[in-house]
Image (cartoon, rainbow, N blue to C red; front, side, top):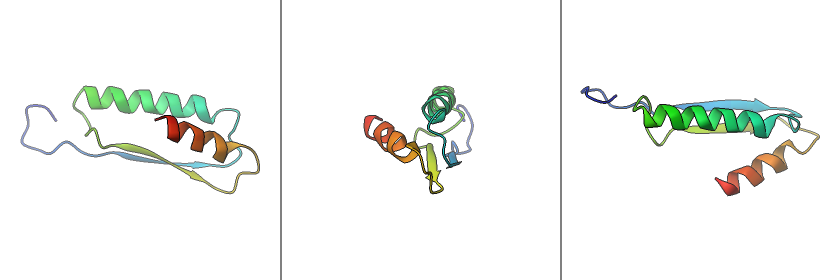
Length: 72
């Protein structure tokens, strides 16, 4: 945190995904915006991440996540 002696925490969000193709990109965008906001406020470290775990989706969830990961 800014102005304190404590180290800024690194946050990892672990998000399980199963057949989420209709909403996953919107959800990822919302979570990324929140991470970016917290980083800019000094509340979390810039190395914080969102980890999506594909739980065997039968739809395009994995492809959408893979494409998004390559862009970011």
